Image 1 (cartoon, rainbow, N blue to C red):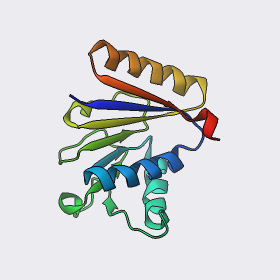
Image 2: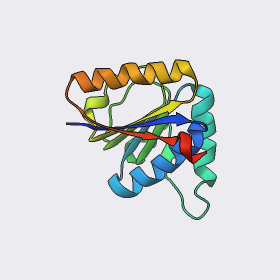
Image 3: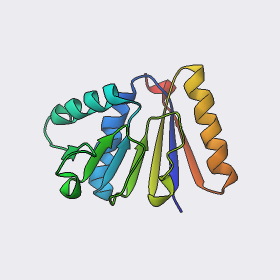
Image 4: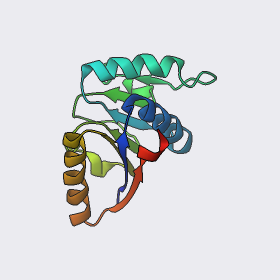
Length: 141
């Protein structure tokens, strides 16, 4: 069953996602990032070319011809056909395919709307018996 980590009160989602991608790639090999929108997808794509500075995180979008051989897939499209062990979600909506992953990382912003949507997803997972862990990043600013 999928293990779910909630990262709440995230001031800079892009920074947290980059750290999570690096950690998930090192530990699990294949990662899927579900971004909020096209703007965040483009920003994450660019950021993964330079961060971390002494490593390369091989990634592409779902529309790339290299998707089958690329271990990190990033996109805002709510679909996923390929293999991956970890899903990182930044969208307010529940990822429809989350249960196909060993791990799910929910990245929740600081504003009340994001926190309310995060609580709604937390209850959804909790009611279905998923193992949940919460990490409040407010103290790490």
